[in-house]
Image (cartoon, rainbow, N blue to C red; front, side, top):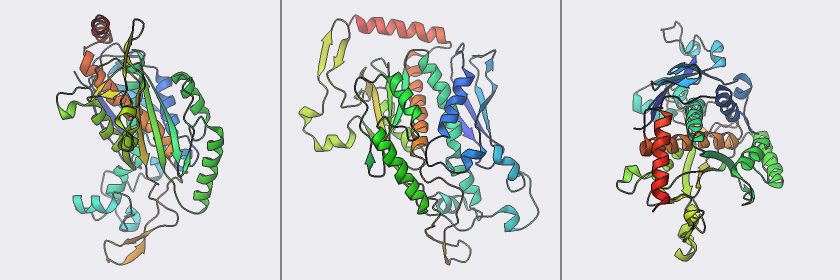
Length: 391
């Protein structure tokens, strides 16, 4: 058993569509919670005008009946409210008129997929590239991840996220005494998704300054997953290592340029005695670790500690003081074409990252405890936990 999904749709098209395969039957979905996750993606200080246009919600059109999954593929639609202004430009049928009517893009923007995609697919209108490569697609991925998140919650597995830094401003780490539910609540109240109020104000001021200067800024975000059993993923083949799969998933988010798990790159500067997590045992907890510097993983498998994964997001490349580029028709130098954008999308990226991580963890969970219904998965999990308890 495994999960998989595909998404389709363009940033200015009528809708984003996702089809999920492999969800067990009898998973009761909370539609309000699903839409709440989509709305979280649209928040955060530094977002642009697009977030004022769209009010995202998911419409499930297959695979769910009377609030529960049936075991069939689940089809999810997220409408693009801005479509009404693009019905001619993005029409699937041919339209009359030249470049202006089609809003043809012929000046690629540095840092985007425009030029690479145009060359790869032999497209003379770079709008055909930017429409799909846009981060708007992450709305569909959040919808998919939100359903995976509900599957995990059924088995008491929780997912949280926070912003670690924006630019050179780093937020203090949350108190170790803060529960994951408290972390979720506190970061939800912050416009930049931090628990550090002093850093929050500095981050807001930095974002505002970047916006005023026509520039953008990136940062680092972190995702934490708790309640996991030992043994998700595997050491036996490279592509079954769950930490590797998480790294790939995080790197697939628009504008992400690096991933680390646990203390990550710090491990390369630290003696082994201060990197590895010592193994402990007591009757109440069984086997556990004295620390969690390896971020919940050993040998590509979960070790029972919380997963901690971070990703770095580069500044959004669409600038209101555009960088130099080259016209693909005349080959002359121009300043890059400007499309609507954000000054900083790091807080929103934190939400996206939560959901791509939730998806990968849910997939590994279903692979390990696979069954055609929620009840069968629960029975498999219970038996496994009993086996571990007797080890």
